[in-house]
Every structure is written in C-alpha cells, then in structure tokens.
Amino acid sequence: MGNVARQSFISSISAYFGVAIGYLNVIILMPKFMTQEEIGLFRTIVSMAMLLVPFAFFGSGAAVIKFSPKFRNETSRLLGLLVVIILLAFTAVFGFSVIFQDFLFSLFEEKAARINEYFFLVYGLLFMMVVYNFFQAVSKANYSIILPNFLTDFFYKSVHALVIVLFGFGILSFHQYLISHFFIYIVLCLILGISVIRSFDITFTLKGIFAKSFFREIFDFISFSFLGSFGIIMVLQIDQIMVSQMLGLDQNGIYTTAVFMALVIELPRRYVSQIIHPYIADDLQKENYSKVNENYRETSDVLIWLGGFLFIVITLNLDNIYHIMPNGEGFVAGFWIVYIVGATKLIDMLFSVNGEIISISRYYRINVILIVFLGILTVVTNRIFIPIYGMHGAATASLLTYLVFNVIKYIILKVNFRLDPFSLKSILIIAFLIAVYYLISLIPPLADPWIDLIARCAITGAIMILSIYILRPSEEIINLISVILNRVRKT
Image (cartoon, rainbow, N blue to C red; front, top):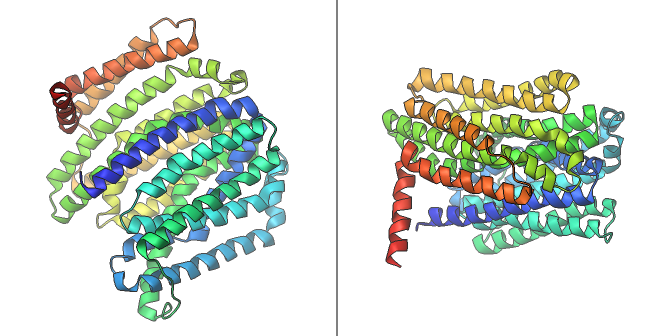
C-alpha cells in the first residue's frame, strides 16, 4: 500500500472512531450533564473562534502547502514570513475587537448575554487554533497526515468526553469546563508542534522575508486564499452564531445537536474527494475531459449512494435516538432540522466534486468568488428566515444557499467543459433510495429503542450491500469486495 493510500486508510479509521466518540458526546454525555443553554454557549464560543480563524490565519495554511515544493531550499524564510503575517493578522483581529467591543457586546446582549462574559476565551481559542492549523499545514506539506488527523478526529473528542464527565460529576464547574478547551488546544499544539519540528527539522528565519518578488508572490496568493477560507467558514459556522444572537443560547443548543447528527452523512465526501482529486488534476492537465467526466459521474453515483443510505439510517432512527438521549424531550424540537441539514448534505454530494474540479482548472478564481458569494448569501438568507421560522429557518437557509451554489458550479462546468455528473444511473440510484426509505419506514417500531435501532441499521446495511451489485455505483467497490471475499475464502 502506497504512502498516500496508507495514510488515508489510517486517517479514515481514526475519523470513524472519532465519529463514534462524537456521537457519544453529543447524543449521550452533553444532554445528560448540560442544559440546552450551556450546550449553546459552548458551541457559540467555539463557532466564533472558528469564524475568526481565516482572518488571523490569513491564508497561510494554503501558502505552506503551495510554496513548500517551490521554496524547498528556502523553507525557513517561507515559514518566517508566514509567522510574521499570522502574528500581524492576529494582532489586527484582536485590536479590531477591542476597538469595537461595545458594538460586539450589543449584538448578543438581548438573547445571549452570557457570551459577552467569555469573549476573552474566544480569542484564546482563536490563537491556539491558528497555531495548530499552522503546524497542521506544515505537516501536510511534508506528506504526513496521520498525526494531525488523529489529533483532530480522535484525540480531541476523546479528551472532550473526559472533560464532560468531570463536569458531570461536579469535579469541574461549567466555567472550568469552558476554560479547559483552551488547555486542550495547548496540548494539541504541543504534541503536533514538537512532532513537526523534530520530524522535518523545521527552522524559521526573518532574513530576506520582505524581498520584493518573494513577498509579493506569497502575499498575493494568501490574500486570494483568505477570501476562499473565509467564505467556507462563514457557511459552516455563521448559522450557529446567528441562531444564538437572534433566538438565544438554548435554541442554539438544540440546533447544533441536531446539525451534528446530520453531519456524519457528508463524511464519505471527505475521503472520496481525497482519493479522486489527484486523478482529476492529472486528466485536466492532459485535457482528457472524457475521463474527467467519467470520474465526475462515478463520484456522484458513489457519494449519493453512500450519503443516501446514511441519511436513511439516521432519519429513520431519529425517534430511537431522541428516546435514548438523556433529556431527549428537550432536544426533540430539532427533529426536522436533521432532515433539512441531511438533505443539504445530500445535495452537495449529488453534485459531486464540482468545486474541486473548478479549483484546479483555469477557472479557479471563480471558485473563490463563488465561495465568498455563498458566505454572503448564507448571512442574508439566515437574516431573512430565522425571524420567520426560527431554528428551522437557519437550516432552510443552508439548504437554499447550497442548492444555488451547486447549480451555479454545475452550469460553469457544463458550459465550459461539457461536464455533467448526472446520468440514467443517477436517477435509478435516487429512485432506489426513495423506495428503500419508504419500505423501511413501514416497519412497525419495536418496543425497545435500542433493539429497534439495531434492527433498522442491520436491515438498511443488508440492503446497502445487496444494492452494490444491483445498482453498481462503482466497479472499484465491487472489485474491492471481491478481493476481500477471495482472501476470506483462502483463510
């Protein structure tokens, strides 16, 4: 197994264990030991820090990955310049917040005043997130993804589970629980930072960092990259902040819990994208558009097939999940949010890797502009729908913006490259998924929610395996299963 495949495989394992621990935290531990307001406060603080990361990081992560090969003999100068830029950007963000502190406080005073008590924690988390992202970028630039993925997907969630339990048993106060996340990030930064510096002999220098050609090339790139990063973070985090600001922390606690349940649907996209991206880049370089379209379509079929079955498993077990969840009656108001957010992720998966194709084509600048447009559209639609429909308005805003975003990218690829992810097989897969959803929904619920959950998951899983040979979403999957079965027979 090659280095990239090996690292992707190991990272996938840690990610799925991380999902299991994440579900334990969100579905069991947090509802058991915390109020909806406390969950909402925690989520809002983290979201605010993450929203500010693009400003303080200022595209430096993308610059590390892009320019490390080019400046392989000048890595110290490259990293030195980026560290200076990061420090200046963070100082600017912090200074701006101090100057406009009264205005920022006023945004949350009516519905979520407790946030104002923890603005200091937002900037502490922000600084540690930026440091961690910097070391993560350096690690990826050196073709090492196992440790950063392990720390992000598994280690953080495991330590978070421990901290929740300590709070639940009264060993930590809620204030100490919140502050503990700052120290968790310190540990993450120390582990990854020491590993990166030792493994790759990383050094920093300020000598010659402002040489005109060197500085201009890098600064032009990170300025453009910053816009894309900001747009993506806006889409991912702004709804949670606006729900807290407009509806209150308790409503955000319910909303973010529901959103987390649906986020697992998009997990396959992360890894399928990593696998297919280099192939598409190579075919685009060769202008082999027929091959690009073939991969584009197969990726769409695989993603909607995987995402569709995950959607069925999650949505048809929502009653069981809310029954199992401690104090679930207080969170069941988010029931339909899971459906809406799940549908949003399915739309994104159906349109496949359109963003990735545009980002490595000659129209890559358009992708950044579209992402910024998406971020702005997300704010506007949330501002319109939240006052009318509450939490469901925030979820609906995301659904509409993702639909518009993907349709625009679809048109760009269709017009300029004649690429289309849809085929007759796409329609058959969608129709099959709808039929499976309907049939499983007809199964009478069993008395015990745990047994009912396991039974529905088992039935859905069996149908999913059978559908591989009926729908044939990917010949690669079928070949992989055949290899595994042959090895099993030989043992």
